[in-house]
Image 1 (cartoon, helix red, strand yellow):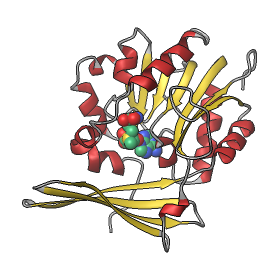
Image 2 (cartoon, helix red, strand yellow):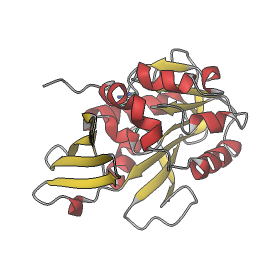
Image 3 (cartoon, helix red, strand yellow):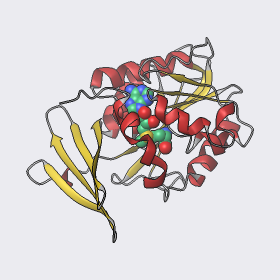
Image 4 (cartoon, helix red, strand yellow):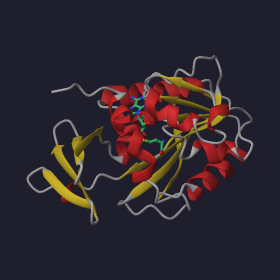
Length: 252
Ligand SMILES: C[S@@+](CC[C@H](N)C(=O)[O-])C[C@H]1O[C@@H](n2cnc3c(N)ncnc32)[C@H](O)[C@@H]1O
């Protein structure tokens, strides 16, 4: 069995990532992030796990000084091939380190699309919060978009969903749930007339309250929790967008 490291998801998914997520419109995320940036301190902005630039490229197009970190060369190569993507400095590395290769401190650090859960242990997630806090300017923001875990989806700790069925392909997603380590280990299984391919994805999920505690340990404070990028009320299910800040004047 091959080992699963920080780069595995990107290296195994880069060629299909944009096609499989073509229906994900980043406009609401970009609008909300741009508004938060406009009301925060002046300074550069960092996306953790920038991927193929789905959010960062349109955000940079609004004149924001963006940087990125990602573990996968293959994902970043896709981003650099897009218009505007080659102008955004990206460091290849583990987002838990929050090391953009410079001494910069940021007006905002953000991580979208539940990608924070790609840090596979609580220890790595706590370390990421601490490193983000170290990198934020006073008044700077840490913004996360994460799924609220829905454990009712898993019967006998597993699920199989048909994500797409057309005349030539079937895309199934098979997931096993480990309630002890709060892990989902999954495979996207694409079956077609030309064969089959596997695209793995593993996550360590955290409850919103656990994220709040990680933030508090890092010296950050929760400012907002919404049910989505349009600042919908958070009702405890689906997705949450949470904004933490580095209390003004604090060198967290
Ligand atoms: C689901 S994609 C999200 C990409 C982009 N942020 C978006 O919203 O489309 C997950 C990304 O996380 C990256 N990744 C996974 N684990 C990582 C880690 N430990 N450090 C840095 N990047 C990581 C992958 O390479 C991939 O580009």
